Image (cartoon, rainbow, N blue to C red):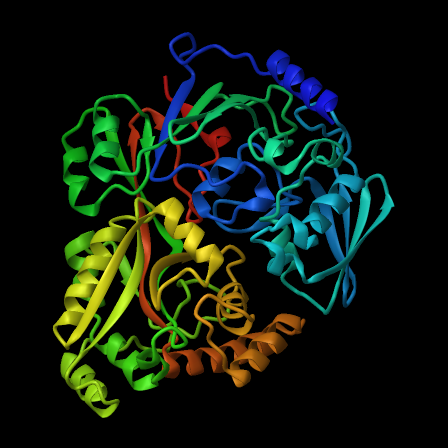
Length: 501
């Protein structure tokens, strides 16, 4: 094992020696609000890490910037039986360490997260797979436990990894030394400082124009903006809406925005605070939440209020459902009916540095709820701490403010994982909802699925297991000469960036 690891390190040293940015003008630095969680794609599930890893790894099916599905490592896919999908792989593709991509790597990539000893946060998503059958070196059949119409969408988000490399090295090593088939090879990761990649000149889609890329975690928003203005970085995420005007007068900087697939919410756990077990208290919290005010004053109008926890454009969303109005008087009435006319106290976990003005949103919520007698004990956590609490589930206090990105662009992504699956992060249980969502995720009839989701959303709207807030607009600050447009799923694919001459 040690011998194999040493060989791997030597291979990296030989393959990945690259010039510094000062030596190569085709280099860019991208500042994110957080560092990567892990460079093992199956030991993470947050969007910023996925964004970085999308440059190192590829998927069988590719999700385009306009959210369509097209061939990736697989040239085509076909449902040959209700529970069997057949995929044909491209030939001649190699991983960064020279290993050839075969069906065995696909089998390994899709079955590895099912090993409970791995501790993957993605395990529940992979449980739809019963077996992966290798037909030949370039053909695989994925057998699902039940009919699962969303498998192509799932395959567009699951990265393919090299079996031999991952089996020859322990998880801690591969978590810091990734090998994929992607447009960029890994160079170096210094936690909380920088992560460097270099262009894969042999990339199967063609060599990228940008040769070197550095990702820098800069959690504090004003520091991130200042770094861009000073020319220390070239592209930044989560520009505060109220600072957009600063870019209008800058000769070499621009703002670029896109409606995001992410939305913001507050999860409510009635098992950790008995008051939240009462639907009247949960509804009171929703009535006490002035979402339009938050969108207007914190985001300069760059956001869209949601009625239920789904982003606009998601399959299964019933857009006829109207958001709860801001009605503090009704909130007070419901609290009194529930026996909390004199007020109550709840705790909230909220992140800082992950979402645009996340801390400010949490503080605004606490202020609004205080007006109806609800005191919030607010815990502002660094993103790494918030994510650790979230993954643990039990470590969260009774409410938590977070964002959710709909990776399949289907209602199942939220409704099953967050509400029907057990356990879930808020310990919410509704048998009728579970049956509706479970039936919808196994139906091959899209009209039936949409109807079932509509019924499920009606239950969620009435029971308010989450406080629905808004769909965010992602705001990026960039150098004007970067030819790049943001994607709605927050992935920054550096191979799509070029520098205008």
